[in-house]
Image 1: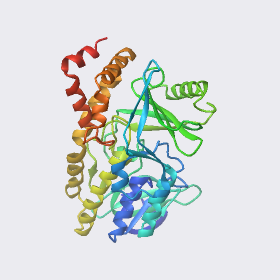
Image 2 (image 1 turned 90 degrees about the horizontal axis):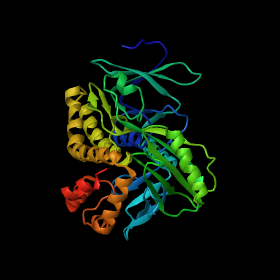
Image 3 (image 1 turned 45 degrees about the vertical axis):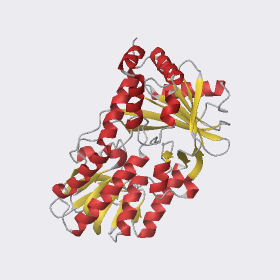
Image 4 (image 1 turned 135 degrees about the vertical axis):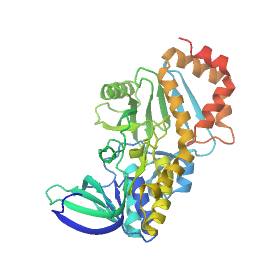
Length: 396
């Protein structure tokens, strides 16, 4: 048990650590169900530190409360650049995704949660969590203030990837991850652009995503030398006239490529990026995190009502989210590993074959095409190409 020195607060039903969209959604939905909820956020303002590109699919916008003021523009397709610089565009007639202003999105989710009655503590960093048979006790610190202690029947760790809290609670750390780097730039680009090849993002991809008029987000994912890769990419874009200047501050963030093996224990649930509930193909985590948050809310609400937040009771959360996402994540990881092994020559060959065979148009126009669910697209692409063709394309 943690020591009792410092400022004490009353017993909450649930404490959420992290005021990103996933944490705020959990807090708001539980508060809507008349649960006493607090949110601890380590930053002094909500959303300002987000390094996410903020692209979500149509399904996410239709299912979850995405504030209209947070939607910057719609996306119908994207322009892809091969390693050699040749390009092709994939596009549908209707919007398939939306670009969000991440700060506005996070702020709106938090505002909704507060309207429902969730209590927010900004500039408050959770340092330690001790769990007993009676409650979970959190030691939190704020700059220049006395240490505070919070108690709750259950804790939701939604603190994002890289947080020390899951490891301190006995959850294994996620060893498979990639670093992202991104800058806000001046740009006249009006389409989402994706750059493939080892020149800028070995094994992954780089992007330019238009946001407000004359502005865009430019960045990439890379296993190593992320800063150097990002700077080289920005200078290339400047030389090509696609951005005004490469001298723009970069933001960095880690993205998990596989989930935690275990995402709940006695009085604790881990959700979102902290749990590794992220698409391995693109690194997008908002939609999957919110889907898992929905499950967490239902499980926690019933657990609090029964006064039973034991590991056995909360294990329903893990069973349900894995039933929903495990296959998708498994196939996505396989595709991710295969993609990382491709040389530029192999990638050129694969892209050319997909274009010549009209496979890309066929996949894009399939009735079950989805921006968010990639396993069907991956398996259908492999089926169309056939094992012999795939083997020949992957030859050195």
